[in-house]
Length: 277
Ligand code: OGA
Ligand code: MN
Image 1: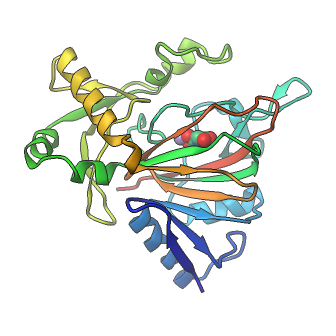
Image 2 (image 1 turned 90 degrees about the vertical axis):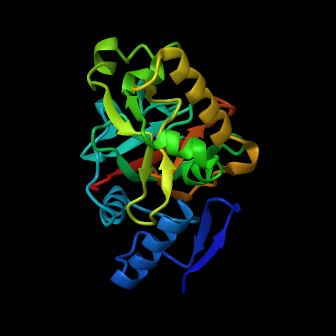
């Protein structure tokens, strides 16, 4: 029996009574998918998944995406993107300090992401939490006038934006960053599976709003980001080894927090599902 317990009033639920490494029946998978569409973040504790099992579970939601940073992919499993601060024999075992800015995974792709599955294999005892906030709730708490204004607007997104004005790692060349050209998405997107309107702009990848002057765009985006990240809207996930967190990139933004001891290993496997809609 699945037991689903909400984590905050606006998003997140812990799911007990399921082994993600097993072949899930259509019924059981359907219950997980329904909970995912309702809560946007699902936490499964105490899991143990091989790369094949993670790929298999994730692929039930849709086609898996391969990340632009090839050196961070798991050998033999290009669908698995490694987040890791571990260095073995001088070779980084994944991308260190990934996603430490509010973002929706791969919003810079023409076909953005439905969701991500992040499996915490080794995690620091303290620190290195991940924060989530609901972009559906953020939209719903704006005035009707602001909501209808936003509905006519288009956001411009690019991968390279995340690195502008930030220290970038020496392995990330400008050419690599520019590999993905800017793409456009509506500022408000209707969620295909729950019908809620969601804001789809984020500090990580959104360059500007196409219809506005630069200063207007900057001020509006700053306002929206401040609104979306109000403390009362934020879920803070503290990782334990064996945690699997599944999140809905259509309905939230998230950020990593770089507050942990660099000497404590943090090693995770992520799969990213494409939004076929
Ligand atoms: C990600 C991400 C943040 C973290 O995996 O997509 O943004 O806390 N991770 O590792
Ligand atoms: Mn991310």
